[in-house]
Image (cartoon, rainbow, N blue to C red; front, side, top):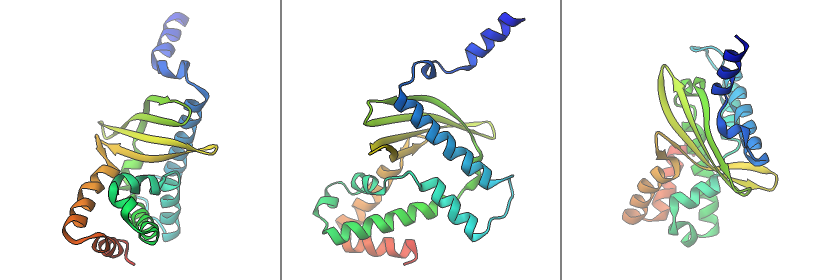
Length: 193
């Protein structure tokens, strides 16, 4: 019986965790802590949320996002050709739009998360996870970078659709047709500014 139990424990432990680097362990702990905070605040399905709880959820969900890095991916060359004031406003508006959209489907944050693989070179990392909700498995990956002693998310993909790249297509279309100022105006409307 002991042998069977030890075999089962060995089978349920991901092999990468046995040889994880300190960076990979720190990343996993960061994401697990964030996941626990979100789930605790969400409470049971069907819970109502105050405005203060919604803001707290936005802060937890988006607190480790590097919106400037995502903006550079989303804008490509347009980021460097924009004025410093335009870049600052764009990052502010872009982050507000993403923060607001992060609460569109709160049930997704109740998913069980499996950490399939974390790879890091000490400066950058890729985290591959699987979110399981209602028996539906969805791959979710994060691109991360180390900023000082902290890890931040620079892009993420749900079901192989990158957040920054999906925005890039729509942003580039607006910039080509109507210019950067039109993109800012569009984002101001979406952000409710």
